[in-house]
Length: 325
Image (cartoon, rainbow, N blue to C red; front, side):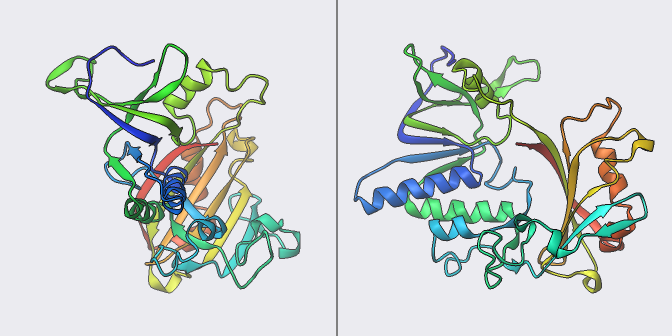
């Protein structure tokens, strides 16, 4: 899989592709274990975004149990968990105007966020967070433990030797024109070689797809199910902002058969800190109507009276979409 261009090379014990929550958590835990064992370990994380967190789109309700296992003193370390969930509401949107609120007694435990669903511990709620800010904080912890992080470097391909063993990755070439030709500023990517390489690219990562194909990793496995998720971040007036309010729902517009829809998915609306609201729609990539536009369905959904009252008078400040496993 690796090309034959002569490249500079660096060697590490572990190379991690992707500075998302999983990649950074893995880097932190590896260094913690090495430090506990008083062993030297070199760990490198490469991130395609211009900075850590730049490609993190999740508008997240976060359960801190795993974070507490990784950093029991995360609060003292200043982890950006500032908005505990105070109230949960779950709705079924029946049509463009009507909504039915589901009683808490009928809501599955996994949907309760004002307290850990796993333990029914109402004294320890989940948090409405910026996943991007959490990743930036994790990167600070990782660097403090000795991890090297290279933002702005996309992994281009895996290095696989003649024996079929993954030996690291090659970062993307720079100075390449749109037609693939080399410009005057061309610079070949580097080889980052490692004893172990972790691929934390997220859903449908391009190297991951190649490795799955090369090593038949999906043989005798159920096909992976995917969705597309949309998210917007809104600044809203103070008088309609309720930090810690979490809304989830399903139904309209995805089930609007008059509009050509008969699809599955769900929506969310979270009130975070700094007078901001996160709103989004997740659409299963199993819809049969080829004319369905998930983006347009998201825009329609925001006009439902239930959601509109949370956004009216506000201003959209960020938008993103990505595949979800």
